[in-house]
Length: 429
Image (cartoon, rainbow, N blue to C red; front, top):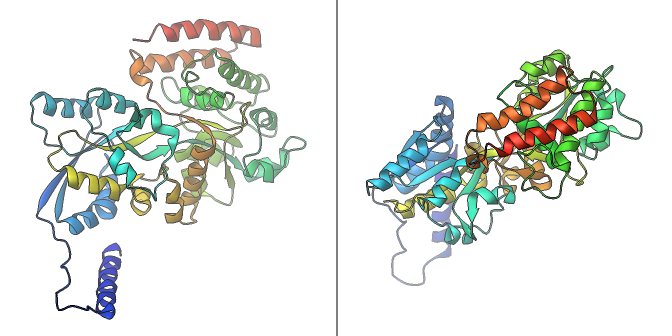
């Protein structure tokens, strides 16, 4: 379809030029033609075969035809493998790669090693693009932009329709759907009798991000809140979890849970603060049974969320630098970035114009709204710690002790948070 539209546009343009006429006998300029070339892209994203097919069909193919270029796309799944590839090229003084797609947590390594080029000049040409600033601490440094964000994932809320029959006094369904409700109201809503929730507490997995988003809603100082555990904002978040446990509102399987999707679909739980991908799949499976809405607001007056994702940059010394710039501009257009995000959120405000109204797109639109209005923190701090799995273990320990009854009071919790913060500090490089 895109090829057809391009051909139609070219035909209409040619008719327009003829209709306008030419006051001289000089021929009109011929369309720009490009010599055959190759663009080499190294990526930590779009690793699955189905994802590569989406990139080829909706991003690469049309670009290749427009610019007479062949794209070589290689992906890396092991942590550090992408950096090692670019580092090896630089150490050998033989840079053969052009474009880099890296995770937010890895960008600092490429920037600090001077392996990516400043894109300020390219950004100056993108007057029609409004990128989220939530990831500037990863994509930018010292006033220079090195990456443009292409995808992210955030935390949203989802509830079974029946759960709205048990809202706390004074809170309406319209309030909740608009995101005008608080964590205190969320905790009150999950009363343990009529409405239950779940925490993704499987060891070494996702708990740290769920609690991190809760804490971010309670602070005006985003930096330093995550992955800490005993700042005032984090204490508020952990107290919410303790209160939910005290009234039996947390599903018992939470210690082994990495997704609330199955419990939501079965009716075992009624509301959840969950990763956008799970929310999207759950909602799409039965859109008449669920409502999707922003996460609760905290003491800051905003919702909070941890957000991961990837960005695209250009390697310093790229052999095909000009074509690389054209590609980055192309990939971050609103029509292409919705495919580049692979079902997650394109961090470009204009991308909403390219989305439809199916359940998946509704969730993505809500995600775009969230990163524009919530306290958002990325994962650029991961390299500051010796081992990220041990960082996760700090939060896992606290949650386990809440669930098994070791921690039963706010005073006990406060003392444990101080101790675990010390353990966290010991993990810093």
